[in-house]
Length: 61
Image (tube, rainbow, N blue to C red):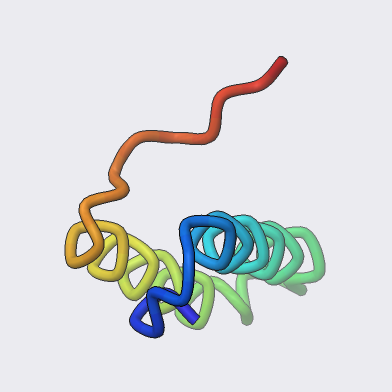
């Protein structure tokens, strides 16, 4: 979704969805079994944000 660059709303949605997935992995982890996958997702999110130059976090109203 981030590499598609169909519009800035897609980039924001991709970031939001990936953040939710990472939090879900950590929260649903049993004795850390999902931590490696959460870290893998976090690394992918960071790389994607750097590539599309969106490293700043979402602003909350």
